[in-house]
Image (cartoon, rainbow, N blue to C red; front, side, top):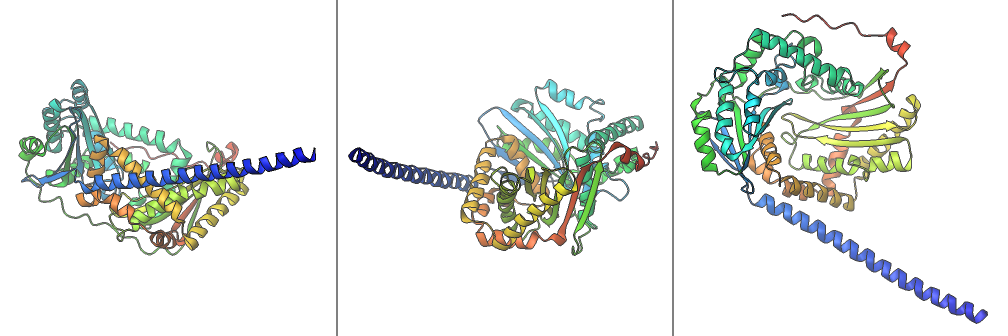
Length: 490
């Protein structure tokens, strides 16, 4: 028996050594595979950026045109971007940029009321529009053969929009209902809106894109037409066409449609907005609402945008937030959800695609109810952010974040619609073609020191707003109900 035990022990040791060697070989092989995969993705992204995809030219009336050829299918994405958004609205008429976007689908001398989208649909295409703080964009996706028609239609409504009082008042009711649906019926949206108002002391980003309800209710036909005439002109617009076209084809069509319009000398100047003073005190908000589900904590920081950041800072912020808040492998999720179990979910992101200021945001749903649960979740967020401000991140985390971003870049570059949006958005907020196409290289150059620097600089609690969302008992809410909205004026 002793001899048998000795033989079994020796065999077990040999087997253990064999397993260890096999495991080590497997881990080494997997590590090399991952490293080679990361290298391949990085190289592919850099090769994409090294070969310019877009061509830019300008019409005689000042309208900029960008063409991104893609001959894989006889389809095109046609977009017109205006250098105007909610942050360009006059005081007292918040929401007018978004309101006008809706009204642009009404009528011109050539197109009857409500027919624009129907015509695009009959052509077999799709269309839509959107408004942000800095841009307003209109787009159609159609077969290549229908491109001349949609360019003719879009060029027509650029300067020939007709609005009746009835159309304006009817659409105003639609906008008010949209606000009630998207904002007033969503406690989280109300809190987000209030936090933005607190984050910006003086800059117009403090106002919601959809507008404040009491100001939407007073928008008029004159307000819409004044805003239209002030901002909609060829020399304040950028045309982006992506798909089965050549630059020469687009230039011929653009000259025959948009090129007919005269430039408006009153528009097109650089946009100058109120600047933020130094932020010296953290701000805190609390919203209680009977419709709120689980208690949640939110944190936002003011930060530079890609357009205003020092070289490399915006790219470093993107990578920092991917490591700290990007998904289930992020530091926040692992700390709050997996290890401490003080939250059921968490997230974080950096939004840098703006003309003036960017924003850093964090969010967590507390695992325990009430302020006690929020205290624990917020304290855990503070610990994670303090650690990254002090120590930065690891090389492995940085490499993984770069790999994820560059992989997304390659994947998204396969979509002509995404390419049209990528170029159009960047150029409308003041970026250049070289900025768009050089982004992978800029991301690849970010160092650990860069990330640590932006973490220490921009995760400063004095530049933040912390918001808490809590469920409230119905009887308590009834006692503090808000007064009714003002009656709209016609």
